[in-house]
Length: 540
Image (tube, rainbow, N blue to C red; front, side):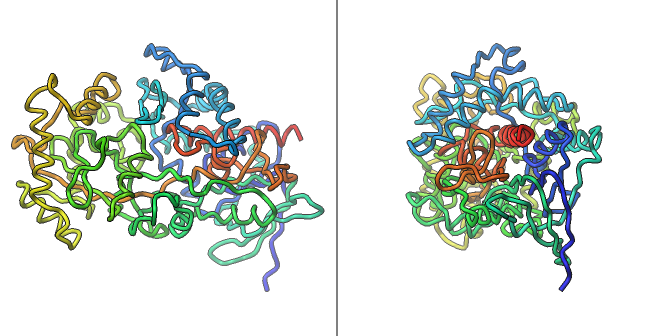
């Protein structure tokens, strides 16, 4: 048997995503020796954050002030608590929420700005709330360059750090054990892939930054929210391929508390990835659902009431689809709507933003993005296109291998909606049209939303139907931590020398978001929890 390769460091960070990187940078600032271990290849350093859109939730930012948006930690906390619907057992998640709204501007926004990260001048307004109040004002600050550029700038900060020699990076290191001696965590161990060479990393402190559970669809199904019944037959994977909950299990074995794994931030508009990652079975993409499309169930019946429109309450969208006998959906639209409104969440398919090219970005904003629509039609199996509704329904049923979509039902659904538009805004009695009118009042949405576009408009064809599945994305629950990111045992006491940050910690406290996220709070809390853990380690 090959003997284990042994290392010694001050702090071992398990996971090279945004939370791990933020922790490492903060420790380097204090001249603490650090070893960062990541199971993935160096080319994917940064984890899921490098694939993200790059939105960060900030309160009372310079951008908000320039736009005349009046925000405050008190208002943000009120919105957060309403959306989260914390229970009496959620002391630590609530306290983390309070900490985040008060610290996000200085400890997250200003921190990344110091690292050279820039933001769009217009703040996006998402998760406004439906039955439950959400964001009262826009708070979603988009990184100019997406999450890819955010990660690149932080990696640059690591490489240019004056204490860079104090950090060692260990890629393809799969941690399978947390080492403990005399009641204290003393390091971690595992194997170097793909050869399986064992290693041990002795450390004064260990930080778990390994992500959530949503990359393992079996775990997603096992922890599915019971009140929603059985999980969907098809769930697509939009999480990281190594977000498999292995460190959660190791922490539990040591007596750590893991909470709220049935709380997940999944998306309702997932489609199969045209170029799936070989390590990510059922790899999916999260569409940004067009506001002007009609969202219908597997039979062609409009979902609701109220009708489904993205941007208000993502959990409600997922719930409405999961309460159907067949838990997938369709969006019905046309070429004009698709070119204007259809987008894909994340860095991969937003080249002009990722590469920070203003002219192509502005062109897409004003003229739409027909190239993206053509690509999806040609390469994504969940898109069907037709010149007539009869042909569209035939193709929808051919795709599913059923006769579930009824032509008369779908035609009636579309005609009723189009007739409302024909009568004009004074006579709108459709909640989707009222919400489109509401969305278009804010400049950040008006430029990306059609002005009451009919579906069967012959000038806007061809017709398009998109089959959409639930997409597994983020874990809202996780390893419970106190306000210093220290892992807590089942009695609520800190486990000596063990910390958890980012998604592994439920983004703080084992579930900082409660039942719903206000969006942008994922990247933001990866940074804050990582910095907080490092500061606690430095203080000793």
